[in-house]
Image (cartoon, rainbow, N blue to C red; front, side, top):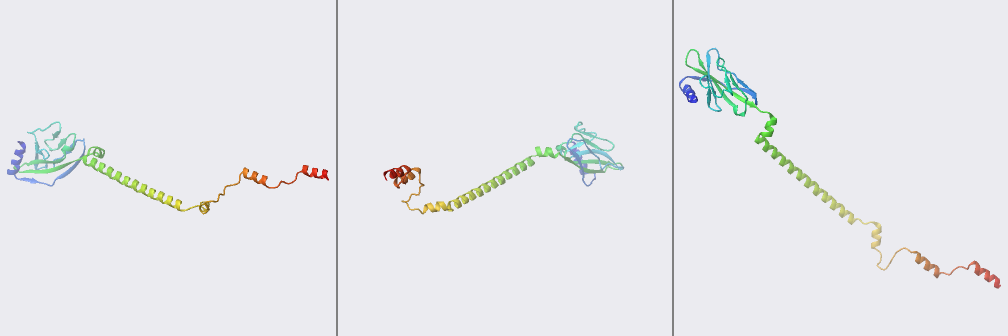
Amino acid sequence: MYALAFLLIVAVVPLTWAVTLVQEVSLGDTAILKCPSNDENHRFQFWQLHTENLVISPTNHYNKDKYKYDVLTGKLHIRGVSSNEHGLYTCVCKHITDNSFFSETVELLVKRDWEDVYETDPFTNVFRITMTVVLLIILAALVFVIYNTWLDRTARFRALATDEESPDEAGSSHRTPGTNLRPLTSLDSHGLDTELPRPPSFTDIRLNNTGI
């Protein structure tokens, strides 16, 4: 009803629009919007909320716990500002000598805590998940490349070790199949002792001398 009355006033009565002003307020604080169109020649009439298409005026007390205004200055108080209050607020004043209206618009920007934004904002969460997945893919690719490089180097070292033979191994590979170069044992040396002639002992020499 009041929105319709405002539209009728705008259509019938000359109305001057000004450049939009910007005001910032932190989330949860009380925003105080000054009526820039209220001056010596104009008197406050009402506020129009573009976000909800509502009118706050002396004849329309909308949500008294949330909104409060000063009749003389037109100053609007918004308690416990949330992201829903972000938007445009138009203060309409009437000229004191005629029926013309003058209005100026204030844009309310609600500043949010970046920690809350980081935890609750859907776009931020999607971006965080995307970055995590990308980092995991890059890490997996690096591990795969390092593992393949290690396998190639290990296979190369094994091939080089197989191709390079030591001198003892090379000599043993050129021996004839019939030769057996095992070391002599004590049994072999004993056999040699039995086969060779033994030198005469002291007893044999004595017996020979006695016979003479």
